[in-house]
Amino acid sequence: MDGKVAKSMRELLERPPRSALPSAPASAGRISEEEEYVAFANGRLGTRAQLMIVFQKADGSLKAFSYTHLCGVESDNPSTGFTVIFTSAKKVLVRGRNLQRLFQLLCLHKVAEVVEASRHEQLQSNPDLLLVESIQFADEGRFRT
Image (tube, rainbow, N blue to C red):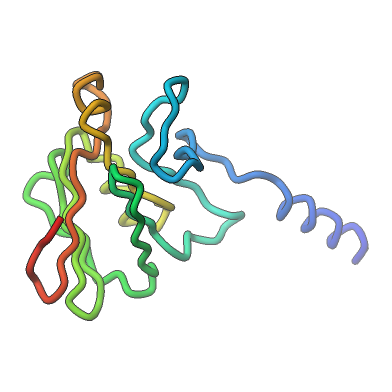
């Protein structure tokens, strides 16, 4: 019986995570002509929540924060933007359109990365789709790009 349990657990761990949305491209900000912009990647490894959240700027630069340091998420209108608050006075301001789903998944620790769209992607995007227009980082409460 232990062999069957170990085998089923191994199969479960090796199974790719189920995701309602496609993963973000692995090209670190360099999206080819064939690939479409994806605002964020989500999902879990088995039943475990994501350990880190990665914010990717349109220029390809990345900044990652641990979910264990997440204090909260604030917004007056989650559709147009929100502020992610981490310990040590670290904040990330995310602005865009149709961001409600991203806001919900972030609160559930299911977002692996948030990707800022390039100017070209912003102009070509369907206005009804989720789009991250800007990501700003703040240290000690002052935002910078």
